Amino acid sequence: MKTAVIIAEYNPFHNGHMRHIQATREAGYDRIIAVMSGNVVQRGDVAVCDMGFRARTAVANGVDLVLELPMPYSLSSAEDFSRAGVSILSRLGCVDALSFGSECGDIERLQACADAIDNINPAEIKALMSEGFTYPQANAKLLGNDILSGANNVLAIEYIRKLKNTGITPFTVQRNISHDSLEFADTVSAMKIREMLRAGEDISDFVPEVPEDLAFIENAEQLILSLAAFQDSDNPRIKKYAMQASTLDELYSLVKTKNITHAKVRREVLQAALGIKTGETATEPPYARILAANATGIEILGEIKKNGSISVSTSLAELSKLSPLAARNAELTERASKLWHFARAEQGSYHSEFSRRFEEDK
Image (tube, rainbow, N blue to C red):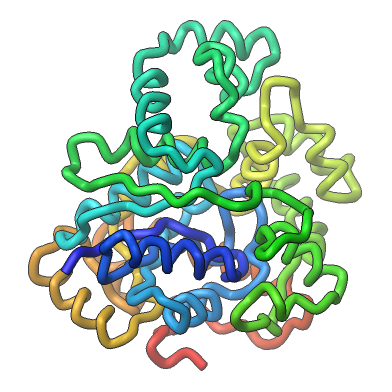
């Protein structure tokens, strides 16, 4: 039995994700684990639907086991996001491959790019960024090709770099649409689906299950502005301009500088609001919370508990007791879910992550 991991956000889970899972199985991987972001995601946004719904939908459509990529790692740069995901899968004790989508679809080309980036002098990157290039633009200029123009290529290359010396095989599936495409095709991007949900449009042709409990960051923007204004941040421009901005888009515009990407600005604003400090993603994730599993997934969990070197549980309260780092990660997960609650289109009562067990989720 060969096992592949997919590091994902499933924001929301759609037909393209099912295609990725099918292609991974067709490549000979019998069992699939997803390491999935929680209620705050890497692009600097709240997830459009709750992590429990996304995890259950993934298991209903081809994934055997879903584990959470905890905070603050889910709200971090491509480098830190990939490092944390690979750290988890490399400690499960049963993983043969990491499967990921890419615009390129050519594992040898991606591998060559990863090797080339490893050989770039950091001083050259720093010099280009001082001239106004973003980090990806600086790398692309030094590499002399446009492979880093694809958001999924960037993550794919980071995955390959982090997989070195793990014994885990990188495997890629070519995307048939770009990461942030707003065009219609046989499948559409998660960004397009989120736009349709925001507009109240029918997405049933593009997803296996339509989410009903939705969240959009603009519903919580006054809360985020307030938190950012009163908390110290590693980017002092955020606190400075949070009192001046009336919307998040305005704050993003005021904070952005030429050599910082829009995604980095969005992440930094949410990191400031949630009280996340520089360096908190440098350590390995201390645990992996179980979000959903089928019968095969339960068998995999047995192998993880026997052969793995990372703690897994459905209970965040139990996981938080492992260490001070685990307690901190759990607290940030709770903060992120509270923020997600305030971003809901229809707010109900809040249920703490510390009392939530996903096998009982309805």
